Image (cartoon, rainbow, N blue to C red; front, side, top):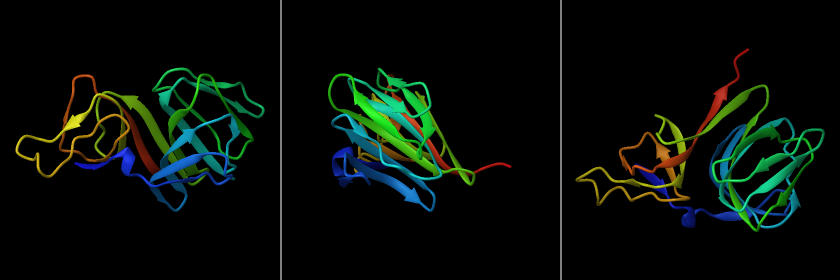
Length: 176
């Protein structure tokens, strides 16, 4: 089990400089990472991109996506998809939040994000609640994963009974 602790991720400014982010994985036309929503702010513009955000922690927020109904994030695990190239503004409900942020190039790639109590066979999982521990006899090799930590899949760990993760599978080629 490959675990990346949230505390070990390099934090950098958003493209527009109005927030912070940490890259988990990326490639040509796709990105998986965390974003800190510290204040009400416009999201960066990503032309030709589809985007999904999942609330990882915090008191919630609303995304005002131009031309669409507001997307409300009330509880951890709330997920919404929206175009990354439409003006979007984040309005916090009760203080700072952290989100899982996934983007893929529209028309070529796609992604799948789900909040689940089981781990898929590939991709990444960001622990929302509970944790994973090493398989017996593997304690010195694989670290434990807790809330906010990222697990590269497939995994060899044992899940706690209350495990809840944001499972991310990207990129996939768009089916025509």
